[in-house]
Image (cartoon, rainbow, N blue to C red; front, side, top):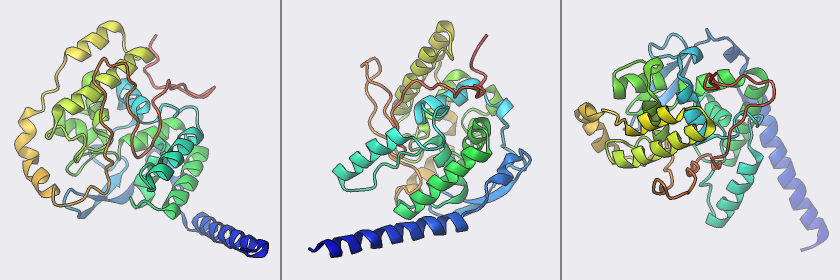
Length: 311
């Protein structure tokens, strides 16, 4: 192959990439309206049979839970389990992306997306769940815009109110009512980590009705991180470990959904990796979707921390 031909191929690829990025810039929705906490928007969400339904994001949703009503343990649970660098990055975790690229090249697939909480929020609010380069570019651009326009607290609030936690159960407000019969504001540390433990795949991989022990083991690992981070005192940690969430009464409520769901591929929830045994000394595994390692999470300088920074 001649030098001119190689150069032509490179220029063509750059032109295509530039076209995709350019189109993404002009076609993506604005994120500025999300600055207002009174903002309401309707997005499509999918049930476990593959059907789409309208879902309201904002105060008009009866299960909406404002940031001040979300327990600090709930906030730190998802940060430490999903995106430990949340307060350090500007929407994109470069280290996680490098690891994801290496993993994808080895597996010859798009198995890992290295998504931060900001990217996941952008995807949930504005994009489809398809795994493609064009969607990933749009996701990155939206995440960068959100970091520029919104505070970390607002991004986390949006994320926690749109995550999938069960059959047509979206957001921790609905999740708290569905599983524990209480508002999100009243969640205990154990209940908070239990919900956070389901996030990698509430339909199959971390469905409490299929394998509650698997969810509990992941919950234990998240509690251990909360203790290590200082979110929980030793007394609170031991009390949380001894607590067993009472979800047995909901078995009949979701049996039908689980049986029907088996006929459909899991398109929106990512299958999480196997958990190490509690006490094995291994770190909490990262999400397959986000690919991030669980590290110590520290806010950026000048950034407000969740209320878990106890006096």
